[in-house]
Image (cartoon, chains in turn brown, yellow):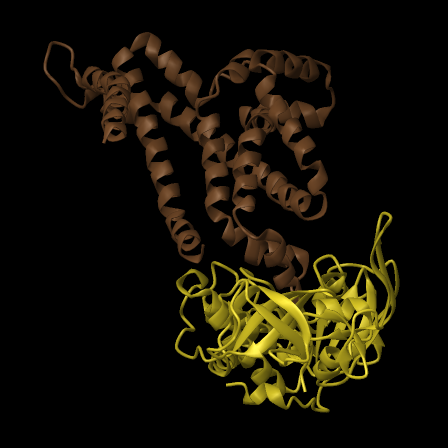
Length: 263
Length: 330
């Protein structure tokens, strides 16, 4: 009973802490000049070509980054768990590095590399923000994606499933695609959405490397001239992330239930 | 229920399997130390031993999940040692949780056929047929999480059989199930195995399970074979001290002229080979008395040590703390 009361108190404090700023922001974003409320700021987003273009650019980077990250992470995590479980700890430490190294330091390093890499390939690569930023965002997203995928793999009897598939005539790639990937789809989706959220919020590297046509930078720029639109935009992207998270938890519902009943 | 298992007869339809001088070492540890063992076509051979004895290693080497340090694995007279698991033509039932969680029972059963590019209609027909064989004809559309542990293992058995493999491999398939389901499924496996006439290697650490279903039992210890024989022979005439200790309970009793005599040469006697209450017997005191249903197990302290005696349950048996006498059962 006492524990329940505490729970209510903690939940209430947390709710106030999170909801008050959100509600204030919502209220602010709905204000119209001269008094009253309206959807003007939200409509302004839809009519701002710069914002929409930057959103498209960032989504492009995000999708590309997510694909590269998953192609790198999923087979690696499976391989390590199946063949080299002893190096799992080492790999985990290695994937933390991008978190440990501050983005500013990383950006400085990248700028140095960028300045010293010649040749037409790199010039083409660095010419557009999509191709230039993707490799760096892959590095940034790696720790989160690796953890998400690895947790997904820990939750299934990976070795048994792969061996069962091989025993039934499937090669390792086929076992991976037909059996393992569907079994960890929630984790893979989670990794993809984490990557998406990261790219839609990353500002340090993009700014230092002077790729200013990405969405987060556009949000900051808009904020300077039109605070209401900027707040509306922040709320809209927050809502977008929530919808994604909700989608993940619904997609994961099946497996959570299955684990409970088979335990 | 036990009819099918009391008179097991191997058929001649299956494929012969042979392990030749099979050795598998991990660093300095010998998981298998020169295993020579042949399975006759259609027979069910139980590979029995304590954990770490090498039985699972032998099974994994046969399935192709591991590579031997030296020696050969032959299926149907053909050396398959270097052939990958996916091309070995074996069907395996794992300990538990091996069903593909995102596929229905029918899709699980049809998976091997899909890998062999069998058409959808034929796959569905065969999956339904196999599910019927294991008594789950109406559960084709169920997902693994909607089925009990016993049902899941039945589906796993159907899945292993769907591709008509040369050899069926059972890796302690009953160990995760509760006692009643375990006995049911054990008999079910034997029924299906006899019906299909498929050569089967059944790995288990449960001696009762091995004795109940197998045509022959191979007892392994520390990577070496101790004895291969019929369940009756292994139980009544254990070849080594280890087999006697591992398969069933054994007393070491000094026997001379058919009587227990302190100081005489010791002989291995099963608990049912002793009885209590004969006035001419060796005196002792009942330490514990455990009612096991049809029989009661008494542990009696005597001058030759503690003796375990299984006697038919009856009301006049001595209770714990009471004096009694022990003799060889007639």
